[in-house]
Amino acid sequence: MQSAEIWDVFYRPDDPADLWFAFQLARSLAEHRQRVRLFCHDVAALSVAHADLDPSVLIQNLGQVEILDQRLARTAAASPNLVQVFDGTAPAPYIARYFSQQSGGGWYTLHAPWHGQPGTSAIQLRTQSQMHRQFDVYMGDSAYAAGLIRSSHHQPVLRRGPQPMAAARASMFSLLGLSPEHLESRTTAFLSAGTSIAWAQWLRVLIDAETSHCLFVEHGPLQEAIAPIFSRQPGQPGSSAIGSLTVVFLPPLLWALVDEIIAVSDYVVTDRDDVAFRAAERGTAAVRAETTPAQVATSTWMLAGAEPALAAVYRDLATALGRGSGVPACVGAYLAHLDAFTQHARHLQERVGRASDLASLLLTSNQVGPNASVEHLFAPTQPNSMF
Image 1 (cartoon, one colour):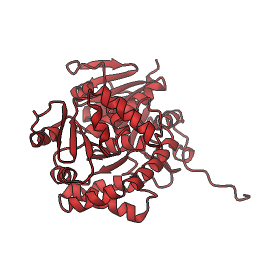
Image 2 (spheres, one colour):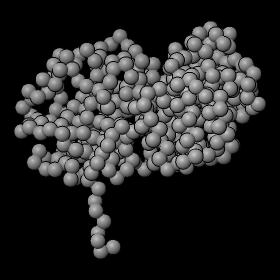
Image 3 (cartoon, one colour):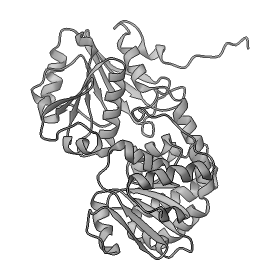
Image 4 (tube, one colour):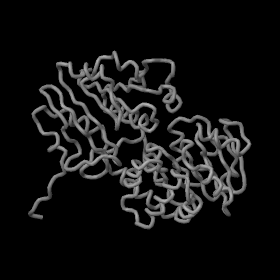
């Protein structure tokens, strides 16, 4: 295999969302018959999310994707193609070796669809030397964007109507060893977040609600915080109920199974961009709690095309979950408009489905000679004035 076919992928440490996007991009490049090396900061977390990984092994393979402990980046030989996912950076010794290569190469810095400002082209040249070029790549689903990173092997399915959804939920409950009585809950949600969101106030609303609610709680620190309220052993899988709320404590699950739970939920509450995006892929309404001003951008991207009144209900809840004030009223307003949010989620799913695959753009730009204008190649075409 030629050296030009090797891609090194780096992402921001201690961020499970960036790990998800980085792995999915590596997998997508590998499906295009490329050799990919993913420098991983948390092999243990990835081994839970994906089968066939050993957290104690420094170098291992998943098909054409090579998973390397990130500490090896300080001594590993640099590849011609370097991809930095969002705010991820390669260590300085690696960068020095990258520029010492005589074969040349491309350095791609990815910008999330909710953070980038693409301007006139999906890919823009930042710096260029005689041998190397560094690009800014702006992800998104518009004509000015470079496409999206998607879940591996995901085939979008629109489950319209109550019967297909009920059947999918019954299958999921059976797989998790749960009683069919949970199907009697009127609303089902999936919670994937840290302890910083206003979870206690939100749970109180669901407990006191007039209608029943089933909540899947992801394994992790927030599940451990919630467990004492329901007299459960922290981290022990199973279900418990208080008032109108039944909580299902999930064990550590593969990403594929989490995606299925997202698909059969009425809505998702999260503080992670990857979970919000995975919900968008599956047409499931999602609230991405806003704990910092920078996170407002994610909501802006997700709410594109929504009615202003609906967008205001969403923003109120996202802000309330992040700041911990006004939660009961905001949760009530959101649930009252859940059908409208579900309809908007289906439009968002269609947007995601229409977007091109980011890996294809990276491969195409990599084949463009150093004297050609990559920005012009990926700029939107102008309509013919004769039409």
